[in-house]
Length: 258
Image (cartoon, rainbow, N blue to C red; front, side, top):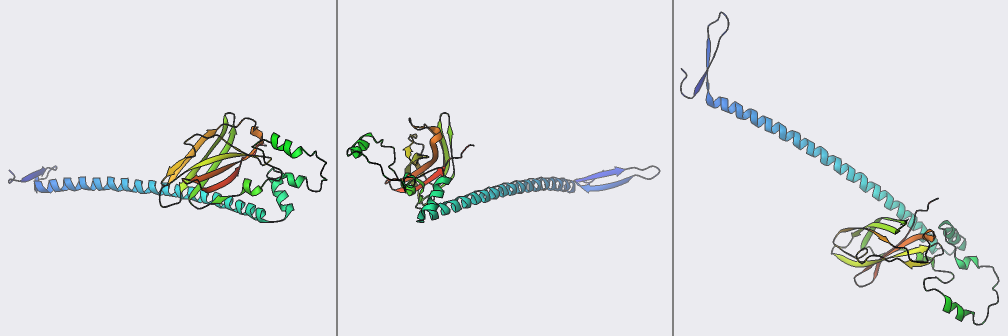
């Protein structure tokens, strides 16, 4: 008979007397609780290790994505700096090479060295009557077509545009670089190979923005009548603030299919 609060453990072996061991019930409970506690700690440790590993993988993926975007941005910046240098130069040969590389050809350059033909006295009046409003005059301003405006208030990244059967699909990532919320509107223009810029009809809320930090834009704009899809060389994006001032403007050439 065990004293109150104790347990007797009796075991027998062949040809040996029985042995008895008295153990307090509190020790049994303590050992049981300890084993449960150790098991829970081990499970918690495994879960924490898995979470740390998963978050580490996510951070590595984010870092690789940021490095890739930074590399693409530096490449675009280098190209834009080269274009800016060519735009600022007064060498006509370098400008003509730039135009030829982009598939554009200045009408003024083509007419250099050619004698002017006799024209009727009423030719300017007839030309003014028959000229289309979307067409550019001879010798268009290359800076107006390819120049860039950036006041450092918004950031445009991952711009993509593609001519599809239903129209011109476009998209980009718009970020607010100002400490306060920024609102405004945008306009999209199709740049033809002749240097003409034709406004594209966009939805009411496609290029309008009122952002605190970030906005993704993805929409489809119909191609205006009279403009052949194959004649579109680039797309120019113009963003204005709430007061109508241009804060960003840049031209993005379309990917040319062979």
